[in-house]
Image 1 (cartoon, rainbow, N blue to C red):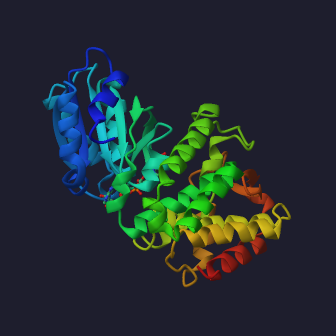
Image 2: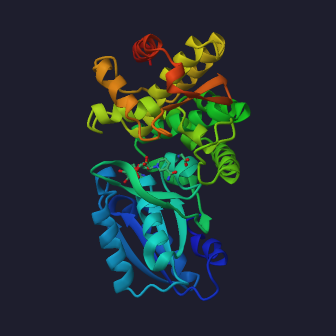
Length: 358
Ligand code: NAD
Ligand code: GLY
C-alpha cells in the first residue's frame, strides 16, 4: 500500500490538489517516509515534509503552532492536503492542523501503529493535549482517505503491539461478539501478540476492526451526550474510566494507553459482574482475551483511594456525572451512571482486577 499511496490517495483529494504536506516523526519517516513521499510525487503531487517530535509530549498546541506555520510558509491552499504518516500522536495532531488551517483542508491518514490502524485513524477525532488534560482541544475532521499497510507492524515494538491488541479486544468486547472472537482467535492461533501482527489473517482482522469502528461512528459521529444506548460512540470508551486514572497517577510513565485500557477493561468487567449484569463465564472470556494481548505493567502497588478520587474527576462525565461503560455480555455494552455503583464494589473491583495474573 505504501508504494501505491499516491495513486490511492489522489482520487480522494480535490481535483485542483497540487501540494501535499507529509507530517511524520523522524523514526517513522526514517522507516517509511521516502517510500510514501516518492509515491505521492509519482502521482503528480508536490510534496513537502514536516517532522514533529516522537511521543505524546509533542501532541501540544506548541507543535500545532509549528505545523501551522509550516503549512502557511509553504502556501498550502484550500484545495491541497495534509498527509499523516505515523501513530496516533502524528495522526491526531496532523488531523487537527488540517481541521483548522484555512478552516479545513483535506487530510489523509497513513497509520503505522496497530492502535492507529484499528482505532485512531478512523472516526475523525483529532486534537492535542493541554496542561489541563489529554485531548482537551480538538475537532472532528474526517479523513478523505485512510491507507493501512499492515507490513509497517513488523517494525513496531512489542509494547506498542500489546497496547494495540488491548484496544482491538476493547472494540469487540464493547460492541461486536464476532469481532471479539476473531480477534482472540487470531491472537491465540498465531501464538501471541507479536506473531498475530505478522500473521496472514491480520489484514482481514484490521479491516473488520475498521468496519466496526466506522459503523459506530456513522451512527453517532459526535458522541451525543444524551445517547446511552449500546450503539452510542461512548461504548468505544470501554475500559477508559480507570485507564485514565492509571495513566494520571503514574504520570503517564508506566503504561502505554492501550495497556491501561487492558487493566481498565478488567475493572469494568468486575463491576459488571458485581452488579449482576455480566455472567462470570463472560468475565473469564474477557480476562483470557486481555491476557492474550501480552504482559501488562503491574497496578496492584498503586494507591487505590487516589485512583478512586481520579475516577470521580473523569473528564468524560456528563452533567457532572460519571458514565461507566460496562458489559451485559461480550459484544454488548451497558452505559451506567456512576451513582449506581456502590463504593464498596468499586474498591473491590479495582483490587480484584489489579491482582489478576496477567
Ligand atoms: P504513538 O503515535 O506515540 O506511536 C507509538 C510509538 O511507535 C512512537 O514512538 C512512534 O514513533 C512509534 N512508531 C509508530 N509506527 C511505527 C512503526 N511502524 N514501527 C516502529 N515504530 C513505530 O502512539 P499510538 O499508540 O499510535 O497513538 C496514541 C495516541 O493516539 C494518543 O495520543 C491517543 O490520545 C490517540 N488516540 C486517538 C484516537 C482517536 O480516535 N483520534 C483513538 C485512540 C487513541
Ligand atoms: N477512540 C474513541 C473514539 O474514537 O470515539
